[in-house]
Length: 130
Image (cartoon, rainbow, N blue to C red; front, top):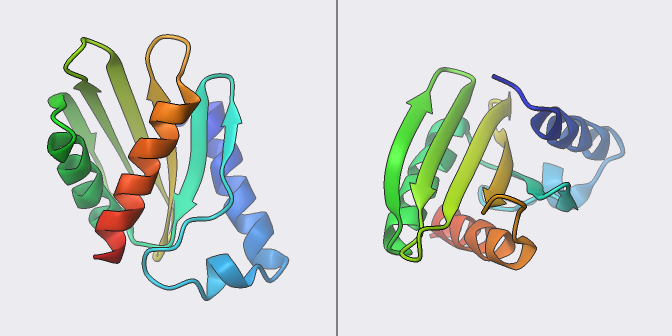
């Protein structure tokens, strides 16, 4: 199930690639594209296949002491619902943009928490790099 935010992130990846964005196209296996924060969703893209990003996301959330409450994965999309120790919900949606790029939408809490979402994204990037 694609959300408007996921579609926006995927389009941003395509636009950056078409403009020759060296950071995205040649940024290596773990680089992330420019991110945006729109209506409570932190939108970014990782230079890694969906399966690798999926594994990094699950490991990141668990390493941050979150309880993964629901997961769903297909060949082109994946989603994770988790809960922080204080009870705040976290939702991560991943969409395969290309064989080597995965778009991500991260939402923390009901109305969104940009700082917490950015922290989760950075930790996912670190796992992809390692």
